[in-house]
Image (cartoon, rainbow, N blue to C red; front, side, top):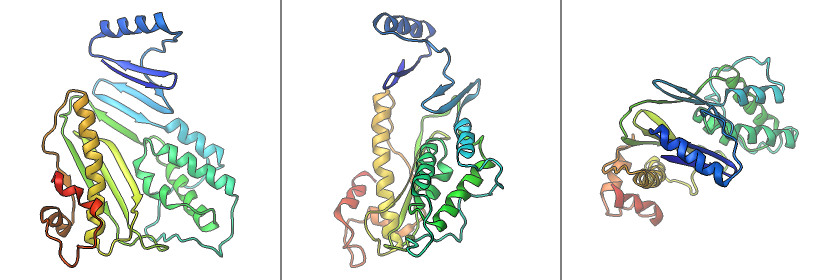
Length: 273
């Protein structure tokens, strides 16, 4: 049996129906509880259980978000961000309502719980200027045409874990820092994703990818421990990177002139490859 508790909400399930009934009876004997039946909604997530899997989405929240910010009748966008979008501080740009802007960003961040496709675009918009607001509205336009998009977890997939990583190089126009992106799949199901600007300036594409690989590895180690707690032991876990130099750097402990400046904290990756 698995039990998930968040404040005063509790979700539990088991392959043994009798065990679920016994657990529910025991909990109701100790606490005042209202049984809601099969799980369909939890912490803002809509959950649809089917014979071949489970679908998780936030379509209701997405529609409410569009209505709240007056974007119900907007024209749909094909992507959450334009490939020509280059945001900076825009200090001379026209200021917009700071409260409204922060409200939209906060709402979109909450939506990323089931929408990894908007993660990078949302994290990129940080300054309440007109140029940034245009990019934020583009995200909302993208959501207009993809309100029913969510996460699909098929039934009966193998419990094999794999990590993917990537990064740009000096993508931020202000401090020239790179942005890491990682995702992790359990079987064929996406279970974890991450997009974040790196803490230091990378001097090469190799270094940027190497730092991203470290972030991906750290998450894999945590997930591996979680699976171990559930009784699933995984040995070799693939980590996919598209940069040959970064891959070679994980295997070669020798510090060369082009890589000796990389911070020690990023080299923990070598212990796990």
